Length: 286
Image (cartoon, rainbow, N blue to C red):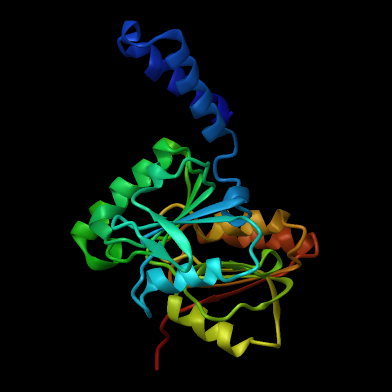
């Protein structure tokens, strides 16, 4: 039903414009592009199983987040295509740097965005125009910084919804899929493959847990969710609940919305033989 509503809304938008300004071919292309985008909206398949990735903000500066993420992907055994984007162009890790994602002629499934917060909306919109269907925004500087940052985050949410982009973050470390040798984060540790899906709102806890579990636990997915602008705990529980490579789900959160729904979903998953272990931070009386 939601898919039908999205289609009808888009058709209404097309018809309400001056249709005489568009050729039949242009109208067809616009509608087809929109239908492709809406078909798998928020399935998270493209996010966690991309065939091509663009790192927007790849940096030549050693030790920077943009450099670490680029190295994690370019030097890995990930079998998909990796494109580096830097407005200065040039070369990094033996690969050409494109000045923008729009300059990449091939299709891109996932955009990893590591640019100043003020630039993120324009970059995300350009990714949407290129029909990129998933994005990880590592950049900080959004609602965690105050009123101005909150408005900026609302803007990227609106853009993601307009273009039907699966959006993880902002203000996160990214994610890791060991089975696919996919380290779409700036974490230096690649855990072994296993049956546990783990996600955390806290980047610091994510890093600490990666270090503590090294060589002891195996993961199907390891993700940092940051500000949870679109993808939140319930979204991920529903996704990993259907993921055949996941048998146990664990997560850490600092604040829950609609906690009752999440608890109900957790009980349903447990009844199916997939336990959920949750840890929420808080305070108690001394």
